[in-house]
Amino acid sequence: MIAEQFEQVFGTRPDGVWRAPGRVNLIGEHTDYNDGLVLPIALSQQIVVAAAARPDGRLRFSSTQGRDVIEADLAALEPGSVSDWAAYPAGAAWILRESGYDVGGANLLIDSDLPTGAGLSSSAALLCASALALLELRGIEVAPDEVARLVQKAENIYVGAPVGLMDQMASMCCTEGHALFFDIQAMSIAQIPFDPAAAGLQLLVIDVKAPHRHVDGEYAARRKSCEAAAAQLGVPSLRAISPEGLDDALARLDDEVDRRRVRHVVTEIARVEQAVEAMRAGRLRDVGALFTASHVSMRDDFEITVPELDVAVDAALAAGALGARMTGGGFGGCIIALVEAAAADTTLAAIEKAFADHGFTAPAPLPATPSPGASRLT
Ligand code: GAF
Image (cartoon, rainbow, N blue to C red; front, side, top):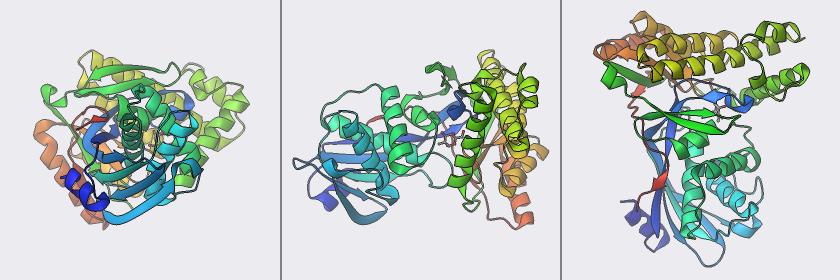
């Protein structure tokens, strides 16, 4: 299907088709840029890129969602030179070339079944799928975690978003049926089996359809706060603060807002450890309470929730969910709720009713199957 669409746009068949998934983070929010721990799963919803090499060093990008073709010269790419959605594939090409990989010109057609603006990491998926396509078109092999690190740089420098490394690692390194336990400081990963159905449970993922609220500036402000606090405490990152040392660290910080940001990060890293311990011991139900504690911390200390997220979490808990939290960067996006499988429908209905009562746009549940990381399709 995408091969035919590619031919309509570019006049030839693609040389190959690549995919990279979106993600849902189970727990560990705003911990990645603090050298902490995260626990995402990759979704089956993904970005698909059909691509063919060009001999002339030109890049041409198009998408199945609009027929425009955006053009750029590979050799002339520099941060900011391509904007809007095409900044992501252009950024991938830019960072690969900057890093010394001999990628060349290419035509790329992008397709997606990942809702944008839902906090499911469609940007990281687009970067990863584009980078894989550009590399493999030239037969260049790069380890998945290295691709993740490269495209994070592209997102930081080319796109200008100061994101951490979780989303790119999830898109590149997750495996089917597992959550990815990623320790950013150690740069180590472990695959943690995650099969709620086998435990009689279901993970609900619900897009709360909240309007975009200054996400980029707020994200950068949170990161700055964490960095300022680490500098004042004389540590390389907040990962250096243990839960036992938290009170002492808080007492040494001047700024009341920074204190709350630090408390979130330190307690959230501890919650990831506890969640992994519970999952490894087959105590999946115990993860529920950690979800809820994570949400409270993001609502009260990190202040990244919005009314739609809070109402969805409260309604899920009131309907008997084992735990619920917002997931992703915040200020909109999705909540996740861990529920007894038999209670999934009533929980969803309770959230829908709460949204109707508040006059919010109806929320949209999404299927969430722990899926494999990026790969070549054909
Ligand atoms: C966004 C960022 F891209 C991630 O790096 C991470 O910080 C996340 O927000 C919050 O945990 O998805």
